[in-house]
Length: 130
Image (cartoon, rainbow, N blue to C red; front, side, top):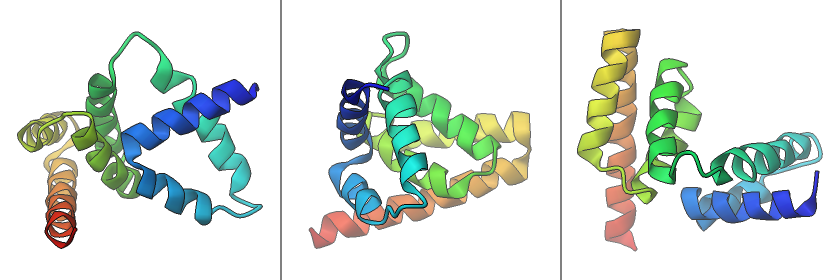
């Protein structure tokens, strides 16, 4: 894989997830986790997120639905923040999780909604402190 793909991936990742998250991720990477991080940066961020077929907002909406339905709360929390960075409104996130509840079950939608509320509260507290 080219360094260009990796560099593009890091740039997009920083824009979508925020530099604070990316810096923390890099700082917490060790020899064991580096191959997975590099794989994700190149392929997920440098390739898929850079494709022209969907804009970042649409990709965020898809991610929220997929991650919530797959019961991946750690990634979902990260992508709730990313969705807000990509101009997905809080009300729209609630609608996405209602759709998830319809197709994947109320417990799944409820868990996602609960996680979103916690994430919103963290974001609001960070904004007040910052």
